[in-house]
Structure formats: C-alpha cells, structure tokens
Length: 439
Picture 1: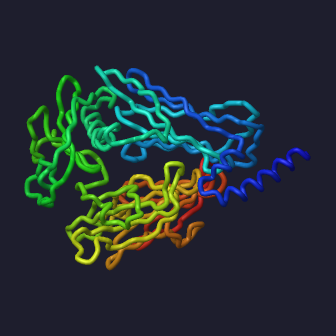
Picture 2: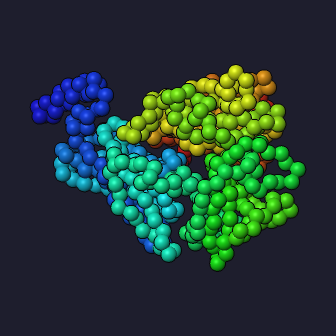
Picture 3: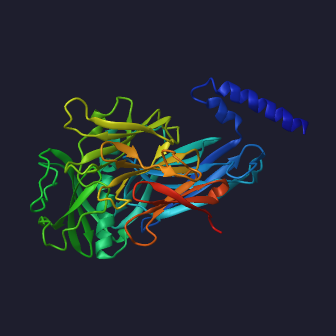
C-alpha cells in the first residue's frame, strides 16, 4: 500500500510538471503504457490491424471507459476512413503485451495514416502504403510518423485517393461486384472548364469555374470505365475513352456523395489558422444557389487525436464583403464527414455535422435555414433540452415509418445505455420518450 501511495504521489507531481511542458514528453515517460499496431494485407487487398498495448509496470483501469482507446484510419488527404473504440481494459501486468481489438476491411491502393492510443495515456501513429501490381496487393514497409513526407516522395496519389475510392465504390455498386474486383488502370490530373466536370447534364447550368480534378480509369469484368472527379464528387463519364452524356442513359450514374457540385479551394476563404476538416455543397436556403458548408479545426497537431476548437462555416464565394455568411463554434474535438439530408421533409436540405467528444463520445449538430437566418435544430425536452446538438455517447437518425421525416436517437450515460428519442412536430424536434439501449 505504501508503494502504491508513493507511486501516486510521484504521478501527481509529474502531471503538475507536464502541464507546463507543451510537448507533454514527461507525461509519456510517467504513464507506464506503450501502444503498437501490427498491420498486414493479403493478396486480395484485405487489410487487418491488431491493436496492441504493453505495460511497463502493473496498471489497473478503474471503472467503465477509463482506458478510452481510439483507433483512427485516414487516407493521405486526411479523410477519415474508419474509427473504432476500446473503452475499457481490466488491468495489465508489467511487461505484458495484450491485443484488445483488431479491425479489418478491404482498402484501395494508396497511402494511409493510422493512429492508435488514448488521449489519457499515450498514442502512436504509423504511415503505410498499400500497393497493387498485376491485380495483387501488398503492403509497403511502414515508416515512422515523423519521417519526411515531401510531395515529391509521396506523389499525388493521396489527393486522388478520395476520387478513386468514390468511383470504385460507385462502380462496384452498379455492377454488383466487390470493390476488390476492380483495378485502377490509370489516373491523371486535369482542369475542367466548368463544374460539370466535362459531362454536362442537359438543361442544367454550371458555374464557369476552372476546376482542378482527375480523370480515373477503372477496369472491371474486362471493360474500362471512366470517371471524372474533383474534391469529393465524381461523375461517370463512359466506357473506355468515350464520354457518355448524363441524359436518358442508364449508365450515366453519379456517386452518392454529399457534394452536389465540386467546390473551389475554401481554405482561402477561412481564417488563416483554420484547417479544413470537412466540406459539402448544397442549396440550404432554397435560393437556387448552392452554399458551401465547411468544418474547420484549430490547434491540431500530428500528435493529437483532435483539435482545440472546431467551427462551422457557411460560405458564399460571391459575397462582396466576405465569403463567410455565417459561422458558429461546435461542441467536440474531432469532425466526421458531413452529410446533406432533408431530415424534416420541409423541402430544404439540412447539414448534419457529427463531432467527437473525448475518447469515445459523439454528438450531432443539425444546421437548417430557418426562414430568415441559419440556426441549429435543437432538442426540446429530455436530457439534451435546448443544447446545440444531440447526444453525448452516440447518436443516430432513422425514418421508422417511412414518411420521410427522421427521428433522432441520442444516447448518454454509462456505456451509452440510455437514449432520448426526438421527433419532428412541424417546427422543432420534441422529446417523446426515453429508452434503455439493448434492453
């Protein structure tokens, strides 16, 4: 008992000193945990990572969610591919190495960054690349996260990866095959003369903006399929080198992505210190002109799992004074990809922004045009009454009766065991009942 008290006293002193150390190096030395990942990929492109923890001394984790482990996988453009949580561990002995979880999926060729750890203790980041040659996949040797990553060394595959992933997923869905059965024949940069990306739809007008993008050719079932893309938006352009018009042709399909049109470089429209985390384009106010919805973070760093502050912006590039039409600070430390959806069936789309809270929490902001100004759709009644967002542990939306109006189920409490249900009454989301999840 005396030894344990001595350890706690030393730990408190170390944490006090760490608060003065911006790099938090002392904290990493005091906490007796180290994290590692074992990654592999088979010849068919199935990726697997085992998440490991090693104790330098015996360590216990009192209570639920006291460990707070998080794994995040991102591609080279910074887009979040997957996140998984390991909320609790019992204890770990000195020198013991355990693997509390693993994750697997089929990934496209390209560069990735995987972060595993806990903001309470420590973390590690590994960069790696999946390479495809002659329809076989292999893993390029991982490099340390602090290894030089110059554009010349990295190439432009990371920027093109979002386009390739969207195109591959879309083609797989329409051909009813697995993404692993599709090969990337080629991709090249180009500049489209307008926002149609070179595949205009009859009777539709497009912004006359020079739009940097990519032309991607995919191979499936012994045929070549061509896609054009920019930002996070792709359009099917035909088979081989022949461009297919988008009118009356069943093969002219667009990928299901939040963006309705590619957007210009929004980093130039935001405050200098802001890092763009997510963006989408939609006509939120019904004036016939799309607005740009952007989420930006401040105070991020490679050794952090989140940001000090996150803000939401509505951008209108043609505004004479400033492109920022509206902005607000969001609750949370991390941001997931934006969704654009008409959740209350009022004829106008809403922007759905999910942000992360702590190691494993999650909350949902819903931005809506309220007739004269933008504002959040807030919960009325229940645990989250009049907050700017729904949920603490987890949140989901569902259209239970198929009427086009979505209910919101927002969880809170230990292990997200309690959930509040909110339903649209024509003007607001009203609390209707409390349920016990898993009951």
